[in-house]
Length: 375
Image 1 (cartoon, one colour):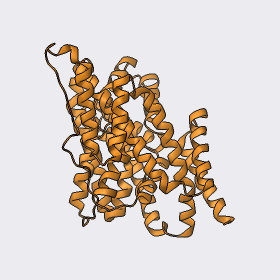
Image 2 (cartoon, helix red, strand yellow):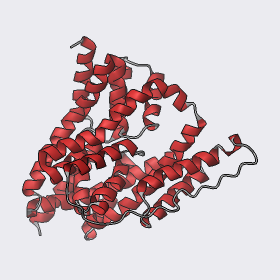
Image 3 (cartoon, helix red, strand yellow):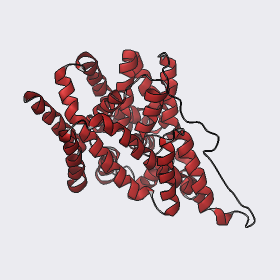
Image 4 (cartoon, helix red, strand yellow):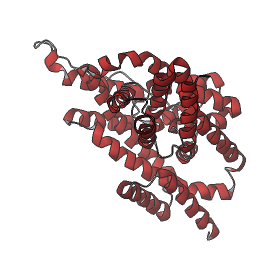
C-alpha cells in the first residue's frame, strides 16, 4: 500500500470514529485536516469539491471523503476513503441495532428512547431552519417548498415532488434564455397518484433496491432521508412503524459518521446482519459511482445556470418534505408535557448555542432514565 493511500486510510478511519455532529461538522473537520493541516488541496479546490457534492444526490460529507480520497490516492483512494469513513459508524450502528432488537421492548429501553425522541425532533427543526435559509433564495424557491409541503400531505410521491419542483424552478429562472414566444406551463405533479399504504412480504432484494433508489435520488442532506424512508418502509411496504423509524434516526444521530447509516439499523431490524450489510451497500453505492462520474465535470456543472436552478428547486422541495415528515414523526415523540418541553429546549439550545447534537441526544437519554426512576 502506497504512502498516500495509507494517509487516506488513516485520516478517514480517524474521522469515521470521531466525526460527530452532522454533515456540516464533518466537512469542517475535513477542511481543517486536508486544507489547513495536511495541505492536500487549496481552499478554492476544497470549495469546488463542496459545490460538486451539492450537485449530485447522496450524503455530502461521505462524497467529500470519496472526492478527497480520489485526489490524494487515485482510484484506490476513492474506494478506501469512502469505506473508511463509513465503516466505523456502520459497525457502531450494527451493535446498537443488536441491542435494540434484544432489549428495545423492555421498560428500561423504552424510557431511554422516551427522552431521545423529542430531542431528535428539536435537532431536525434546527436543521430545517438552517438549511431553509440557504434553500429559499427567492419567491420561486419559496413557492416550491410550500407546494412540496402541501402536496406531500396529499400523498404525492416524494420523487415527483423533488424533481418536479426542480424542473419548474429551472424553467422559470431560465425563461429569458428560451425563445421569447415560447410559453412553458408545467404541471409536474398532475396524473401522479400518491403512495398507497400497504403491507408487502419482506424480501432482501426488494429492501436493497429500495435503499439503492434512495441513495441514487436523494437530495437535500441526511434529514431528507426521513421522507424517503417513511414513504417506502412505513407507508409503501409497511415493514416499519413511525416509532421504529424515529428510533433508527436517533441511533444514526448518536453515532459518528454519516446519518445514512440509519440504513444499517433498519436493515438489521428487517433482515439481521445480511439485511444490515445489503442496506448499507445499497444506500452508499450510488455515491461512489456519482463521484467517479462527476469529478471531471465539476467546472462545467457549477458554471451552468440550468443545473444551478434545477438544484435550487430540488433543495427547496426537500425542505418542504423535511417539514412534512417532522410534523408526522412528532406525534411519536411528543407524548406528554415533558417531552414537548424537551423538544422545545433541545431546539433552543442547538439553535442559540450550537451545541453538538450528540450531547443533546445523550442528555435526552439521561432525562428518560431519571423519569423512569420516578415513574
